[in-house]
Amino acid sequence: MYTIGIDLGGTNIVAAVVNEKYEIVAKAKTPTAMPRTPEEIFDDIAKVCRESMEEAGITIADIDSVGMGTPGTVNSQGIIEFANNLGFDHVPARQMLADRLGIDEVYIENDANCAALGEAYAGSGNGAKDFVAVTLGTGVGSGVIVEGKLVTGVNNAGGECGHMVIVVDGEECTCGRKGCWEAYASATALINQTKRAMQEYPDSVMHELAEKEGKVSGRTAFDAMRHGDIAGIKVVDQYVKYIACGLINIVNALQPEVICVGGGICNEGETLMRPLRRYVEAERYSVYSKIQTKIVKASLGNDAGIIGAAILKQAK
Image (cartoon, rainbow, N blue to C red):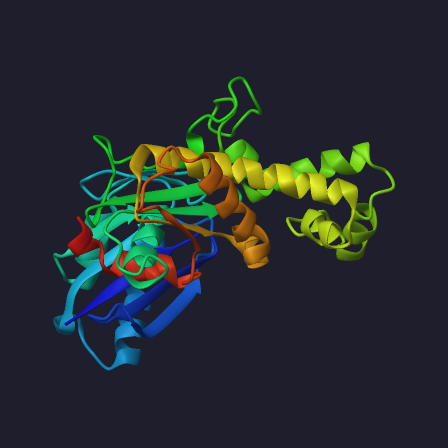
């Protein structure tokens, strides 16, 4: 039997047929084309599901379950309570998708949780049963898995590590709190930190690098660091410390087998991962334990959420 995984994003809708080895057999996609009504969007979700099955040479009778990852908050009934970038407000996603595909086994989950599942089962987690995935993007997304099951809490909103505070009364976060990990460790935060350093260091090579690229990006400080630029070195070192602070908190609280770190910043590879591991190893509470949490780079890229969505049934 096969499953279908769906990644509903603000830009594209992607559906894929996934086999029992967590491998993508066939894939189809279409633009989300916002703004549109939920009904129009779910018509297209069903369409790309059928297209992926056609590409795989199978029918709905060969599908054991369908799972979908979506931005926003999803409750236990499969209702997307709120997703601001999609304009969703209490959209009965599970029922709408089940009706359109003619299948009862439909599961809906937050997209960050789906990405965590995908990495845990088929990616850098290598089958770890206790696993945390962290994504450094516009914000800091995360998903927590304990004994192979998603930790979603009493209200399905659990696992939001990005909104634990690492600096009391610190930088304002988009969630309304101050000092959240997201406000210091996201790619957005890195760009803001780079811009402030550029103001402080008018002779920094970061000015030249940003001008060539046409903007200040998450690469600017790292590229400057590679040029031996003092300002770039300071920005990168401080940014890595911020990421490490959150990772150490996760290690101390949960002691997972593996934490994987993803997002565009991770294209820096070992330039980022090596110092991260050093900070975690130096400051974790379990410093004398023989078994330690592994800190690894995410490996599935954009397929993590699709594969994770496809295996939602077994992870619930």
